[in-house]
Image (cartoon, rainbow, N blue to C red; front, side, top):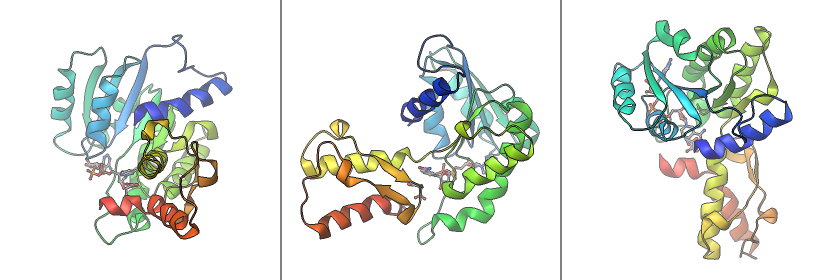
Length: 244
Ligand SMILES: NC(=O)C1=CN([C@@H]2O[C@H](COP(=O)(O)OP(=O)(O)OC[C@H]3O[C@@H](n4cnc5c(N)ncnc54)[C@H](O)[C@@H]3O)[C@@H](O)[C@H]2O)C=CC1
Ligand SMILES: O=C([O-])CC(=O)C(=O)O
């Protein structure tokens, strides 16, 4: 997931004359995973530990298991130095001087729930992490995975604005999964390797706000029946619910 996240981030950094991810000029990124002990956080941390550009990896969570997750990953034979940080009192040390903070902290939905049902619980979690970013790493790129993404991005943005450190090019909602799913489904329909499919998905990360622009798919989607095209659009929009 991170390599897909890093590509657009690199473009943003270049446009702003900021630290450039796309060349070898900087090779020592500190990346924080906030929510590192969870279902998303642990595999994400594993992927980041394998990335040679990441030299410091700070794993933050409120779960008691967090230090163990950190120690476990630190045994991997890759350069990134891993630190585990448990509980709010250790949040500032985790965030300090981060280049990138990825946030999957919070609750996931259970069957029958919408992403919006998570708002009340997750809003304050993202708010508090954003406040710490404003204080301890105001120039960090913030990538928000926590749902509902459509609402968590504005919350983090408002916290950063209030602290006077908001840069819209540095606050991202992670919706890459929608692009990946669209490519997978089109690959299946067309009978091609999904990695050869390019399909823009615009908008947000919830229901009808997920807009796969099927007319722009390369190669073209092999569907002519409007009902089937509509069904594919709806499958991409509701794919997260398939997983619950
Ligand atoms: N944007 C996207 O494409 C996706 C978003 N999600 C969202 O990501 C979030 C996490 O999902 P999972 O990892 O499956 O859930 P999970 O329950 O497995 O993990 C969440 C982690 O967050 C931690 N956490 C809770 N409160 C915290 C706090 N105040 N500070 C730090 N950590 C805290 C928990 O201890 C737990 O380790 C959910 O909101 C889910 O809906 C999940 C999949 C895809
Ligand atoms: O649907 C969910 O709750 C998790 C998510 O965002 C996805 O899988 O797209």
